[in-house]
Image 1: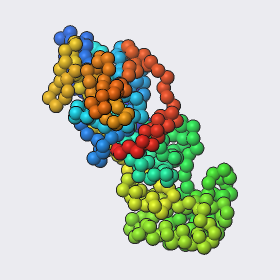
Image 2 (image 1 turned 30 degrees about the vertical axis):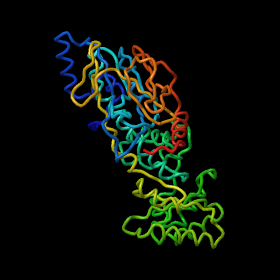
Image 3 (image 1 turned 60 degrees about the vertical axis):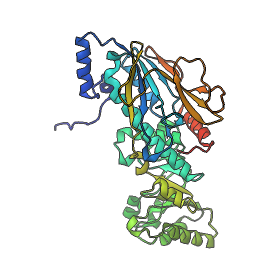
Image 4 (image 1 turned 45 degrees about the vertical axis):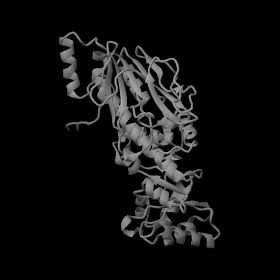
Length: 400
């Protein structure tokens, strides 16, 4: 039997530059023939805007870029904003902030622009959507259900971004294993249908699944949600800890009224402790709308199919001379941040100190050398450390 082609690039193929745009291959061929491949350049990753009319975004993808450059044995220096930083795309004067900088001979890394941007654009987009949901949900539980909307090869990438942004749980087995946390999920419609109803399904789950796993029933398969909730409660009694509603839009009506009816019936039975989780086509806006009466949310497509952050990669210096194409800002740049005034300022890279234009105090420099001549300089932070870093920033009540 003929083997079916697998339409996904291997790590080796990416490191070999095979996932680049062909025009970079042809550019390198021209530069090689003209003896210009060793032209030393300073290049910046910037973006002209933030998805969904955002004010700030979550910067992710740095370590995939460093891993790529390392595997490709590139003799480059890389400077970057810290992974997991939330910040705007422009400084206080409207200058585009450089998030990642590559310094070296252009011919060495030209063909890696495409995969580099792919890592940064996608992960920053997913992470930003997840962060917006974290803000929208406030203290309510957030679960990542989005991996079924994307190729399975990138499921851990999606869940990593959600976890760093502050999601409380993820459904993917592999992602959970990589993150060192338990996978989270409920009884699916398929089990209920094959078992013959909600009662049989939750009883089967209770018989066969480890008692440490929460008993959360999906209550909207065949009957009215209130009816199925009471059936699940009767079947499990004190073991029932939660309800998930995945009501289709054609039957939804007022979601709030449905939840309030269920809560009333549970109150009558002394089970106000049972949590109500909602899922099915949720967005940032619906999470905001429902958070007053729901205990948690399972969100998928809004995150996994989020708009990417539209990064660009541009030369801003050639052989020590500042230069830029139209619409870009020439020259090497450092980024200062004033924690007191909460503003960013781009300045000449080698300037010894950057003063805040508002309070005149010294600003923190945001860009650090993270790779020198192809060698990663610092220990890679864990996802938990990155998550704590994001949480600390969100505690400052950022608007993104």
